[in-house]
Length: 245
Image (cartoon, rainbow, N blue to C red):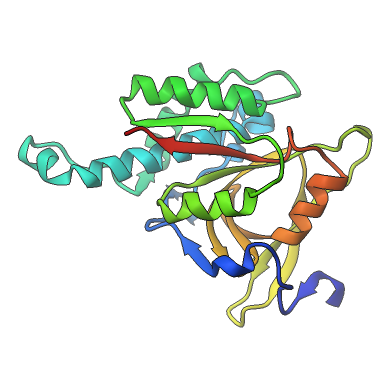
């Protein structure tokens, strides 16, 4: 099993940024305990359960930004009797919230949601919820690492796509996902492809992510290599969020 363990991350384009983290962690109160973000596997709907990772990533981004904006205006909200958005939700509340949002994010059978659909759905949601943000799908690999770091420094979660194989679409190459031990050792524990995750932090060349309601880590060098050689920039990239002034 030693080939599944990485003790020291190599220097990467993200190493120079040091560490970045969101100021809060979103959790859902499930029967098995508090989660780390949401998961499409909790839903009985075949479309959400099988292909709803983009919907979950969009939902959790909106949840975080709504909470961020509510905290910014917390004084006014308390004065009006409103409570700020919580960073923890019951499963029942989370389920209702995701199902409502599903109307803005149609899931294509066996395909899910592509990056352009994801950005369009987010922009509509921003408009309807009066959130001062704009979303666009990032194209190309140049400066992607720095853009991730910049978004996190602005306390904005980053939706990251781990694309499907392209142009060899019949291939089944996957990107490793790691768990981090208390000793700082990264152990390969799973893998994925054609999947959206939410980046919540950077740790010297590693991305800390939320996926399937759990905390995982992605080696940035491995992600870049996968995106360049196994996928393509349209499928393996980020949703870039800017705040309107």
